[in-house]
Amino acid sequence: MAHLEASIAEMNLYQINNAPRKPRILIAASGSVAAIKFSNLCHCFSEWAEVKAVATKASLHFIDKVSLPKDVTLYTDEDEWSTWSKIGDNVLHIELRRWADIMVIAPLSANTLGKIAGGLCDNLLTCIVRAWDYSQPMFVAPAMNTFMWNNPFTERHLMMIDDLGISLIPPVTKRLACGDYGNGAMAEPSLIFSTVRLFFQTQGEQSNSTTANT
Ligand SMILES: Cc1cc2nc3c(=O)[nH]c(=O)nc-3n(C[C@H](O)[C@H](O)[C@H](O)COP(=O)(O)O)c2cc1C
Image (cartoon, rainbow, N blue to C red; front, side, top):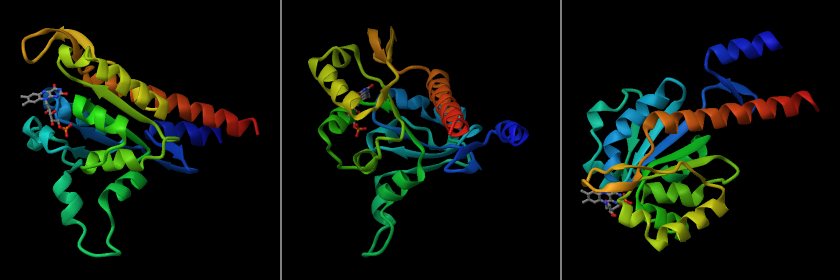
């Protein structure tokens, strides 16, 4: 048994619902300028996990689609509507929510943060969040100008999403894309990846030890 668990780990597979497979990560971008790092972020995850990507309309101004990993499909609001034509067809945001083990929103814009906090769902990304099962992990990495980050709305909205069980990967202080210096820059893709991976591994080890003790 220990031998089997070791070889599963070597293959980068995890026991999920009693089946050895890679984690399924849904990575979503909203319209912060830090979305220029989205492709890099997808590359960080794509070796370790099965990855699907979601982008808001605003984030598409910053994402270089050509540099995304070849095996990562990028879904947009247009796909939400073009894949549905009649009753009985799959609804994309529900299918993606069903598929994913973990959702990571990086970057998280001030606008999408506010919408999530208020339960609004007017695009593919926020519909997935609105349908999410909060016993499953969701991580967000906000990115915004310091004026926006320090605005009183941010704290209120962060408290709301914390209540839902969403994990915050906090922004960092540095020179921002607009030239200002301050807090609000998205955490580096490598840090976002290591945070999620460590969480997943720790959770897996805990559930293994619970199973072993029963
Ligand atoms: C050049 C440019 C850069 C922007 N950068 C940011 C940003 O870093 N963070 C942020 O929260 N909003 C930023 N915005 C504003 C968002 O793009 C805007 O609020 C948009 O509606 C977000 O939509 P979304 O949340 O659906 O992606 C920027 C806008 C522009 C034009």
